[in-house]
Amino acid sequence: EWVIDGKAVGSDFPFSFEKADRELCFDRMRPDLRMPEENLHFPSTYTAAYSSIFDTVRCVVMQGGQGEVKHWAFNDPVRRHGRYLDYPPTPEEYRQLGTRVVDLHPMTIIQNARTSGGGVVTNVPRQAITVGPVETWKAEKVSIWQAGCHDNPFGMRLTTLMVGKQLPDAAVPMSLLADHPNVEFHFYRHGIGTCDAEMH
Image: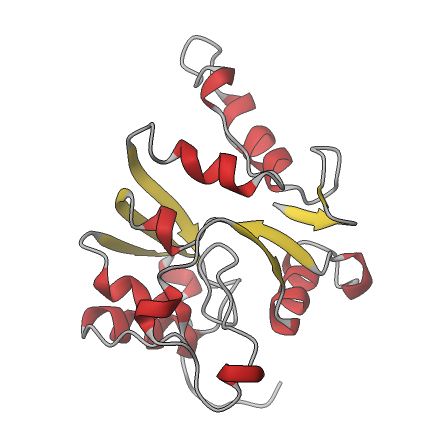
C-alpha cells in the first residue's frame, strides 16, 4: 500500500490497493461467496504485526505483478549507495527483507503515474509498504501476472529467462523467485509485444 507522511493511505486514496482490491474483486462477489471481512488483511505501517500474520495462516497463493524495475510487490532494486554502490546485495541478503516501508525507485513512481495516475508524477507517493521475500517464501505458490502494461516486452522475457534458468540476481529482484519452489508466470497474449526496434 502507498505511504504518505509516514502513514498508509486510506481506501479513499484514488489508487489505493485496498480500494482496488475491494472495488475490482471482493465487492463484486455475492456476499455468501465473499471472503469474510476478518480474513482481509491490508498492510499498514505496523509492519511487524502484518508480517506475523504469515506465521498464523496458510498462504496458498501470493498474487503479484512485475514492474519496470523488475520488482514484485514493491521489492525494487536496492539503492546503489553505501555498501551497495558498486554491487547489489547478494540474493541471500535480499531474501532477508520482510514487510517494510520502502522509498520507491524513480522508475516505479513514473510507471505508476503512467498506469494509475493519469501521467501526473506528482500524484504518486514516494513511499509504500510492501511484503518482502520473507513473506513471499512462506507462500506455497507465487503467481505473477504479466499483462504487458506494467513492464515492457524485453523485461518480461528477461525475468522469465532468469527464473526459468535459475539465475537469481538482486539487481533484477523478480529473478530471485528462481529460488522459490513454486512460481507461475501468466501472460496476457496480446500484451507480450515484440522486442523489435521501431520509432513512434
